[in-house]
Every structure is written in structure tokens, then in C-alpha cells.
Length: 121
Image 1 (cartoon, one colour):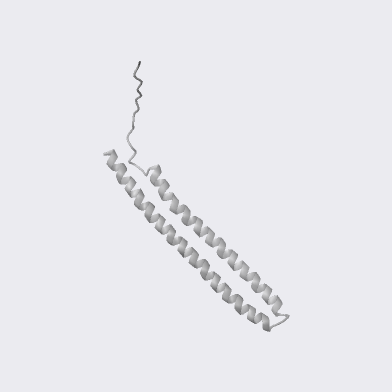
Image 2: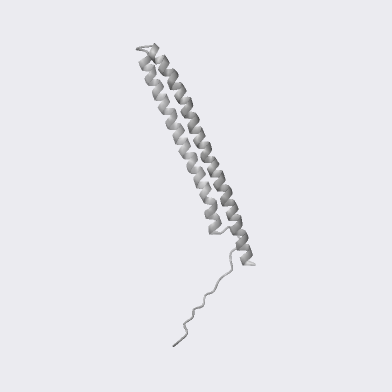
């Protein structure tokens, strides 16, 4: 019976630049932040266009009958302010989550870097 063995060579770790793991850990919060900003921008644009069209429709109908549409305009303005606050609140909450994610990944990346440096030494 023969003893089968294999040999492998392990090269030195590259300490000159960031590794794949640390780069990937930095990329996640950046992508989340940019995605959230894009989604918020699109939502704000849709929100503005929706209320612009609604106000245009109210203007057209208001010329036919004044009183009920004055009330409708007030309700629409309140709804617009409320929904705008909601959009801003959701964006703020999302950005808080992204900041927490970035902080966590930064700490994890630092831990990985220190561990890698300790293993290399």
C-alpha cells in the first residue's frame, strides 16, 4: 500500500492594497445608499407629477363649480404635505439603516484586516 500525500504552497498575502473581502464589505453599503437615493428621487418625482396632475384636474373642474372644489383643493394640499412628509421620513429611515450598515461593515472590515495582519506576521 502506498502513502498518498499532496503538497501545496501557500504564497504570502498581499498587504499592499485592500483585499477582496474588505472591498466587498465596503461595496454593500455604498450600493444600498445609491439605490436608496435613486428610489427616493424617483418617488419624489412621481409624487410631484401626481399632485401636479391632480391640481390641474381640480383647476379644470373648479371652473365649473367653485365651492366643492375649494374644499377639495384644501384636502389635496393637506394630503400632499402629509405624503411628502412620509416620503421624507422613509428616506431618512433608510439612510439611518445605511449608515448603521456602513458602520457595521467598517468595523467588520477592520477586524478582518487586523486578523489578516496578525496571520501574516
